Amino acid sequence: MSSSSKGINKGKIIEAATKALQKGNVSKAIKEYEKILKADPQDIRTMLKVSDLYARIGDVAQARELFEKVADFYKEQGFLLKALAVYKQIESRLAEDDPVVFMQLAELYEQLGLLNDAMQSYKSAAVLYKKQGKTKDWLDTVEKLLELEPDNVRARLRLAELFSDKGMVREAVKHYRKVAEVLKKAGARDDFVKVAQRLLYHQPDEFETNKDLAEAYLEQGDALKALIRLRACYKSKPQDSEVLDLIARTFEFLKQPHKAVAVLKELARVYAKFGLLRERDEVFSRILSLDPGDTSAKRALRVASLGEVSREQEVSFDQSGEAIEEFEGEDLPLEDEEGQLPPPPTEVSEPSAPVETAPQEEEEEEEESHTVLQSMDDFIKESGAENENEFEEPEHTLVQNMDDLIKELAKQENMEDTGFEQIEVVPSQLQGDIKELEFYIDTEMWDEAKILLAELEEKAPGLEALKRFRSMIDEAQ
Image (cartoon, rainbow, N blue to C red; front, side, top):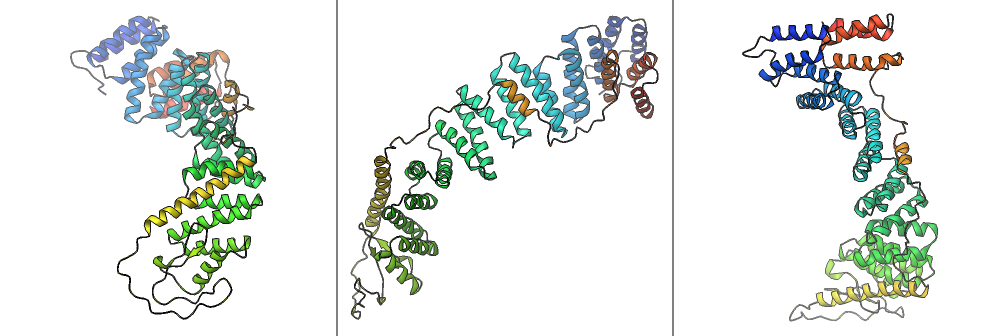
């Protein structure tokens, strides 16, 4: 910004302002400096001086307006430390109960990588929003805190339940989901189950959570609950191979091998449909382990063992579950049900027109899907657990007091160092002056810094902190 202005004698004005200050006439000094600002509204250094003088005489509104203009200029120019120094002055001298100022400080600390300080400022803002009854702003601030500490599971769960209490379902689900992901990754199965249940209370059709919860239930030995979750998954994605596999495993656990076999046959068809022949054959082997006499599985594996079969030759199933082989050219020597080889192949004439099979395949697919779903429905009904969403209103076992959440978030474990040196303890009556001196140094207001430092050296000769500030000022001159 400009250091001189057209139409005025800037040096003479500064001299007059300085004399006024020496006499203690701050208001007159302000009027002199404002002459410079009137001629050059973008003179940032003069604006800083005037901001400071307004703060001295207690004109909070004028001081804050000018301080914020200076801070905005520093931010736009990338001078984040200087902007930070200005906002620290606003907070300590003008607006110590304004959460907006703490939010500005937190964002600057975060941009500078000073995460510990950022968390403390977000915490201060959150406490103030709470006192003012601004719940939405409070919750938004806590979310920003959690962005700095994404793995703080307990705090995020508290926040999810607070959102739930306020009826903010979308936000609650978002945080329940993040907690569930962390717990699943950590292998904390029992805790994952509790969180997943709360998530599904709010959003019952969440596919991945239903599937993961079903698997966790199965690991806990609660196969009926697993089956209820898997029914919801199957309705959503009837050809999902993981879901079909889990349904089959669940029926095996429930000592229902014939139902498991029916599901595995559908899984084999899905694998075959997508060309996953090795996986298909593994499923046929599982079928034989459950039912060694299953004809269709034996035939399918025998076909696979005799060579690669093209897509047109793959095995499909009729509605009874029996395999239907469709081959072109020479027949493969398959045994019949009595173990006898079929008679030698006879000459086969070319069909006059291709046979349409798609409608039949669709009918088979619908029939098999119906069979799997009906098997689950029947078993659940027989077990007396027909309610698909078995979750009741979650009991909030965690303390939901806002202060407790803030304490949880304010833990300093594993946080980065602030990067600031800690000055020695100074007498309480000088602490405000020390902050002001730091501000002058941070914003390179050297004349003001030298004057204030001289005053402090008279009040507290020998104070080590003042020697450090004297060295900083001397080096800058």
